[in-house]
Image (cartoon, rainbow, N blue to C red; front, side):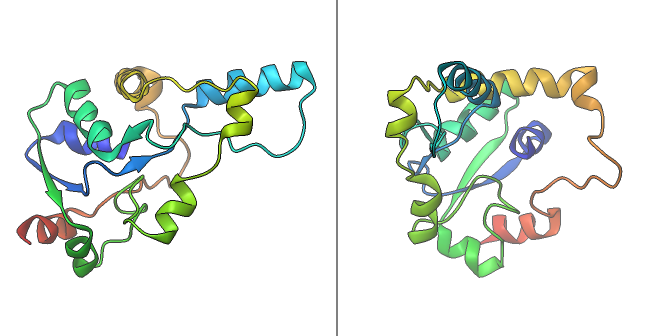
Length: 165
């Protein structure tokens, strides 16, 4: 949600690279469908329930956010080294993004074979992003989730330092 909100504001948007870095995620609707089916079928045991590695990339995710919002935001791709130099916390300040390396691989290279063999299917990132944007614009999406809610994302001052690098 933060990426959609930030991109909707327009202007230069720091895009954490590399753009072709693969991600794994799951749309809650796909997880719910698979879970209900698994319960009905009596499946048990551990399953990694996420999209297959390469199902989406950081570039495809952010480009889709630009398209979904209809904004003319400019994605400015920034190297992981520059992000670290500014002191940006991966994932918390740049949601979904982790720099290439062991931690990224541990999070985004899970073996989802067992879940896919039992029927898990993940919709395209374009559908998830578009539907999330429409929900965010709806009355339900405008409500604050709970008292003292603080969305994650990059502080504007730190964003400016990142864009200046």
